[in-house]
Length: 380
Image (cartoon, rainbow, N blue to C red; front, top):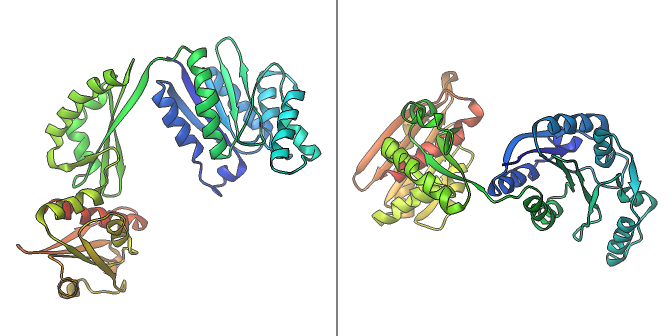
């Protein structure tokens, strides 16, 4: 099974000015084709540093995919960097220049002289026509490697990946396997608690099991390599069943299921409606609940200075004003330098008042409080 690395190129990515969406898309696509992804690297617009990253990747992997740096300007160095990495010159490709000119004609524009730069690619490389943009792409082949340079524009990159690159990789590397992942979502337990119960499964080689901690949630990922999706599913299923037995009600869903969906589903099952009062959460709990159709009747954001002792009465008053069956009140208390979360849950069966200390980064407290609150609702 071939291995791959991704190199995303652009100083704007390196400085955090824009978010890199190309690498995650590439990673998922490679995974679905059964290709092992070894590393993702981001490099600024510097030909020597890009060339060095490519040379290092060639020592580890069969497939190197770069994105970005194929535009017409001086700070688009990918063509020169790839040529430098493999020790060749760039050469002008008249057919690429014709393709560029035809694309501009369709836009009713005339290409400028610097657009000719885009028709230069490393000597001996295979050109890839770009029917959805003006930047031609290319593949450099060696006996064991393929260096594939794609545009940084996500729409163009995704189109070329699916319509040109994946067919090429299937043929070149005789791809026939898949890598499939199943993600189980948990709430109500910390990463160390989950690890204590499934740690032995994390030693497996295929399928593999890994944990990913989020604020107030922990994901358990099961990944299988197989010749077909059906075979991967068959490998994943017994591991998933085992994890369900070990973790029980801590698991609230899988893959695309969200905690807010499950919480609202619990309310629907009880035929109850919900009203929310929150303080210090930035409106995030209300936004989560509003994003899903269901029994949520509304929420109110009150000042961050709300005294936790006032929370119960305020929640009950708001619940009654909305005519809801359930009232949920949440406040973050930052007095005395702490990050305590106070929660009031009022249901037809009674009232619960909880105090949950939070010891993580203060900026994550609202997210943690939201997930704690939704987990209470889902367990009604």
